[in-house]
Image 1 (cartoon, rainbow, N blue to C red):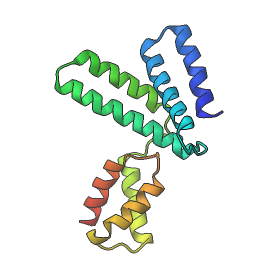
Image 2: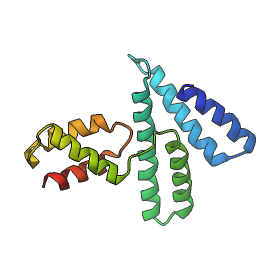
Image 3: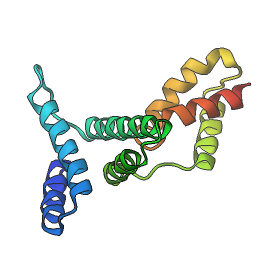
Image 4: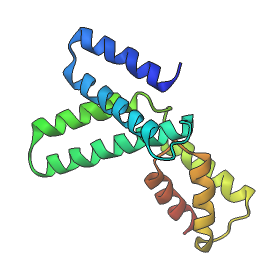
Length: 148
């Protein structure tokens, strides 16, 4: 079952249950997928592209929620966080911090990386290895701490 089929099924369920917040988040995913399909020079949508799209949507909701929180708009903050949670359900399970540390240590030993000068190389390997499974910001912090 493709992501689009899952989203359509979830939209129907949310409509029947009258879950407005969930419906808004699902429609946002569907709209983003449609935009991807109709782009000029559109390529076939792979699972990697779908994951990147979902991560982008989650990040947008998180940033918006942070802004609302700083402006004491609790109602809008809760709405954005709820949408973020709905979108995140379609992402693969995220790696824990301990799993990331162990995997980065393994990458360091496998590729004979010795210092902070090779951080770019390690980040390239790590972002490819953890695509969709870990937040790149967290991976970057772990890489910096392990190489320092």
